[in-house]
Length: 123
Image 1 (cartoon, rainbow, N blue to C red):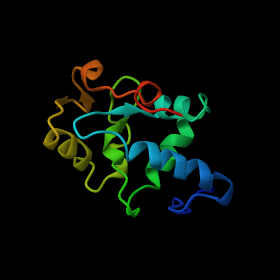
Image 2 (cartoon, rainbow, N blue to C red):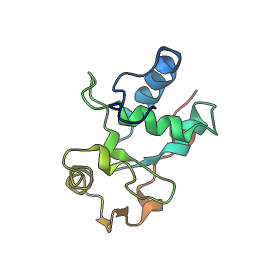
Image 3 (cartoon, rainbow, N blue to C red):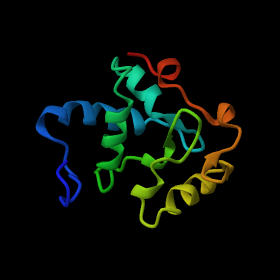
Image 4 (cartoon, one colour):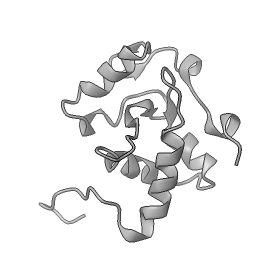
């Protein structure tokens, strides 16, 4: 992205199918559970594309049907996408409302709340 350009809210054409696949997976994350960018990428057969999953989450706001992007965190349970919520505290508030304990921008007991699409969904 060039400097001083606003972030893109619609995925480029070449990424549109991948973004749609990401949204399909994220919509299946149960309330009260979280997954990681990398777990979604691995499920989609693109293990090295966790950053692109992050881009998809950044572009997910306002999608119909809604995409629960607040349930996607980094591999350590950190709320690295919180700055893309308005206000940034909204991501944590949504997780807490679902019963997930969050402290210092990190999901506590991450292993307990982790939802692995590779194990939970059939290809």
